Image (cartoon, rainbow, N blue to C red):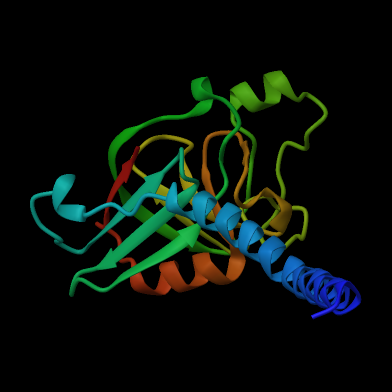
Length: 190
């Protein structure tokens, strides 16, 4: 074998290796992106209702303010998971046990006294059905005064710390929960 043919083989290998790497690079980059997504979603926690309640009763809602997700179990044990908005700060966040005491379609909204103090420019009342109404199309009223699980027309808020104390869902999600969660549904915010 001559030196020339050895050089040709080395060049061929070099070219073949370069071509293979060039075509494999997008796959390697996609795999790295997938790992990033996987790491992000692996931090998402799913809770077992039995760790928080003794029985399902009329149903259970657990809202995780860290994961920004809400789990809802019906009385027959079917569970669904929803992304949420959560309170902007820890001092606006109330945690613990409560329950659904009332349900309203197209609820009207009035800022709480502390909201009015922080934001005096806000309107005193926004009627239900108004696109600027922060409660969206449905609201579950909790036994804690001023606290709600409700929809929102501002979908940018979901997945963020953006509320003044309530738990917000996409309107289509709160409409689903509204139909499935009767008054008396047990609620825990963690």
